[in-house]
Image 1 (cartoon, rainbow, N blue to C red):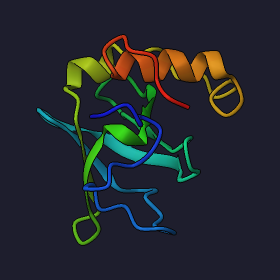
Image 2: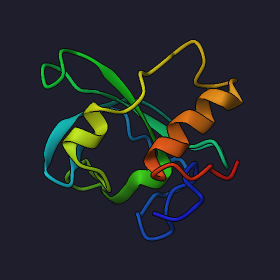
Image 3: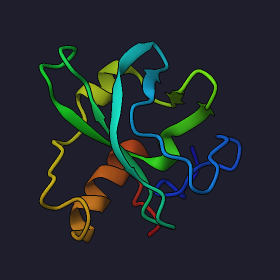
Image 4: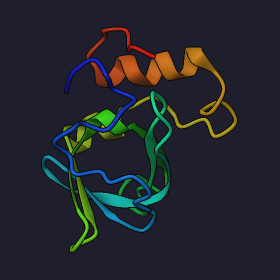
Length: 119
């Protein structure tokens, strides 16, 4: 996944200006939901996934670096995480996700396996 967790992987297929809202999201072991909102801001890119009934309507914040592949034709993204890893992720905090570096470090560190993210 690399240390640039808050940027799209070069091989993911993200195009500037691409609107991912509504795209289906697939974990490495199955479907997890749809993208509710996203940001493509450099060093702060992410998607918010609405998991629907899968984990009782919970939303999760996924750093853009977790996205392995984007298929614009099928409107799907695949992430480098399992359903359990996403289910066990830190709680999505809509009031903190855009301006709290500690929260970004918590989320980024979780998906990097405990290593501090580069911002």
